[in-house]
Amino acid sequence: MSEKSSIEKTDIVAVEAGSSRDVIVPQSGPERDAIVKRLKLKLDLRLVPYLALLYLFNALDRGNIGNARLAGIEEGTHLKGNDFYNALSFFYFGYTISQIPNMFIMKKVTPAVLVGVTMILWGVCSTAMAGTKNYSGLVAARFFMGVFEAGVGPAAPIILSFFYLRHELAWRTALFYGSSTFAGAFGGLIAYGVAKNLTHESLAPWQLLFIIEGIPTIFLGIVTIFVLPNAPETLERWFVTPEEKQVAIERSRSGHNTDNSLLDKRQLFAALKDYKNLFTCLIYIGLNIPLASYTSFLPTIVKLMGYENAKAQLMTVPPYACAIVCVFAVCWNSDRTRRRGFHVAGSALVACIGYILLISSGNVKANYTGACFVAMGLYPIIPLMLSWVANNNVGHTKRAVSIALLNTFGQCFATVGTQIYKTPTAPRFFMGYGVCLAFTVVMIVFSLVLTFVLNRENNRRDEQYGEPKPITPEEQQEAIDNGIYDDHSSFRYFI
Image (cartoon, rainbow, N blue to C red):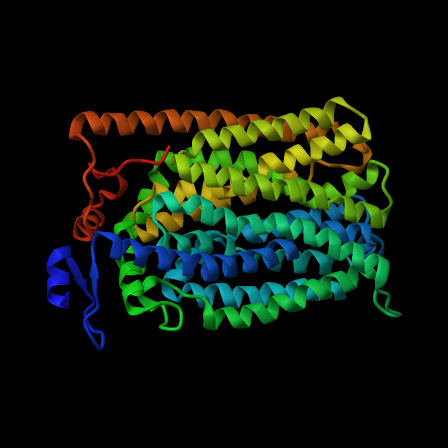
């Protein structure tokens, strides 16, 4: 069959302008399906794992202070009273204030530059913690590490939304954020290995821990500047074929990524006024209070169950292993069913069961089971919420600001989670577990309310406008230019 007859058979083609040759891709049929399948496979095997690797180091460096506590950081830096808890809080202060500015910086530079440079800087801060001698030095290092770590977490969902369609996003976001649960497991294994096998005449185990986990981050940040793809239009030839690149561009435009402005102030205010973002922020506040306390205090909680320091480091691994399985399973099913809210509420319910076990029983086995349930319930909610927000906001700036708002409010209240497990309340921690249980209930309530509200709005649009029609890139851009965004008559919310 000639090329001309092949084109006529598909009847709709796309031509990439400005290339060395015209790139013709079919808009439907088996040939396009094959191109899409190859493209998604390459992205799944290259882009998603690389982003997951970045976030693994992000979570590893953020959470290693909990393992360092068992390795003697409080004695080594002469911490007293609430100094340790306050040092944890300062990380979240830095993380909170830099969320929205980082999103605007990403619009000015490229995601690769933002992510790579901030990785280098937080890696320096993490490594520098090995040299801290007192409370002031530790607080300064944690604060600036929070400032720089805010570059990766919010940027990654934006990058993924450039390459994947709405119903493909939660599973890939889960693969990305699931690496934070791997970080919890690896952090415990690394801390156990350091405690058991490494000694240095002038460096304490907690100092070795920061150095071992900080230096690779710096190296990875340098690599990221040069290898992380920023958008479908910038995909290199070694990564995809010209046909796959063209399909990636078309998929990105069909996923409401036609806005090319650096900063749209109207979208900024639209994100701030959007009622959906109020609900998602409340849900994320409910998540981050228990999540921040869990990652920082799990080693201490396990130790107080009766395990010795090195064994306590090792026993932090199984809860994270359970969480990894749940993250992937829940988010895969969320994409399959195209439902977010019920999965958030169901996961929060699992966390509730865990906290009830921790509060109600002094039995070591019951408490440890409860700790596993908490991890299994909390961690799937992270990718679910970020996907939910990305799914329901149209326009680069609006989507970026909405995700930044989600993280800003969540991390702001995460400071509460660092203050509720006070030493005098050990080993039962009734106050800490009670606060976390209350906020998991908050998640359940607001996720179900938001699901109901969005479903009602979808039904209203169906009744008023009929079944939604595919939106062309030109119509998307017109909707953005006119300030319509996700209020377009053919747009339907993910619920």
